Length: 191
Image 1 (cartoon, one colour):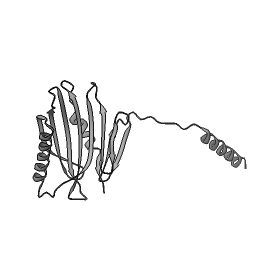
Image 2 (spheres, helix red, strand yellow; image 1 turned 30 degrees about the vertical axis):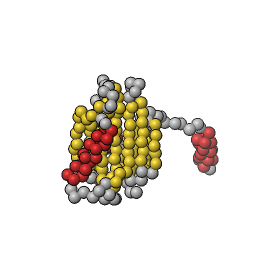
Image 3 (cartoon, one colour; image 1 turned 45 degrees about the vertical axis):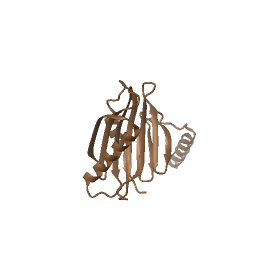
Image 4 (tube, rainbow, N blue to C red; image 1 turned 135 degrees about the vertical axis):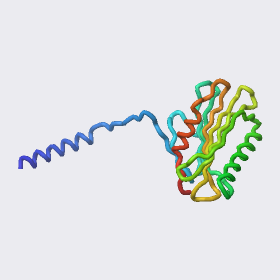
C-alpha cells in the first residue's frame, strides 16, 4: 500500500512539474527552410538571409544580398515545359541552345561556360555553368543551373539555378559547391 501511495504522489508531482515547466526551445546552428511546389521540393539554408520574392504552385524565387553593396545572390526553382527527347544528347543540346538563346537576348557576353551531365536522384540532369559580363563592363553574372526531366511527365522538367550578380573582383569561388549542395536537396515529387 505504501508503494502504491508513493507511486501516485510521484506521478502527480511529475505531471504537475512537466505541465508547469517552461517549454525549452532548441536552437539549431543552421536553420533550413523547406519549400514544396507541384513537381518538386527544395530545402535551402539560412532562412533569415533569403527573401522569397515569388512563390507559387510551380515556382519559387529567392534572393539575398552579398558582401559588397551591389552583390546579389538568387535561387530560382521552377517547373518547365520540355519536348520529348529521343536520347540524352538531344536533351543536352536542347538545354545548351536554350541557354545560349537566353544569353543572346539579354545582351550579356559569355566569358566562360561548361555543360555536363550530372546524376540526379532519379535520372541524369544537365548542369550548365556560365560566367557572363553584363551590359556594364564592371558587372558580372555567374550562374550554375540544373535541368532535370521529371519522371512523372515526359513533357515536364525542373530547372534549378543558383546565381550571383556582382561587380568585378567580388566573385564567389564556392558558387559551384553551393549550387551542388542546393541541387542535392532538391526532390522531384508527384504533381
